Length: 81
Image (cartoon, rainbow, N blue to C red; front, side, top):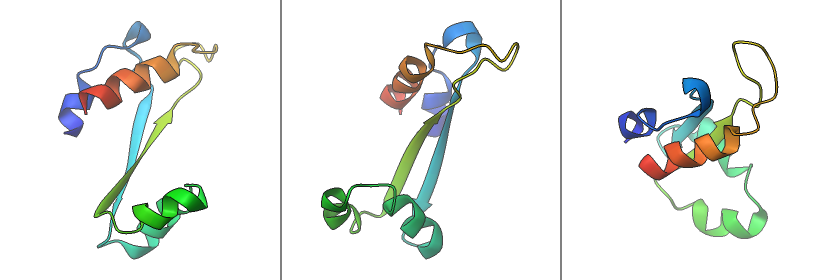
């Protein structure tokens, strides 16, 4: 799945995404990701086997200028996932 996400196109080929993944087999990490959700979503998400958090780097690595396409690029990668 994450290999498919890696192939998404991105502005200047920056690939400004990262995915944090935790499974029920990692209780500390799973609880940390679960804590990022609103309480209403925690009610059902606590029963999922895995949680995935999408992150975006908001500056270009090459020049540290703002990357206004970062969230769009993360969306493309998530769509591929």
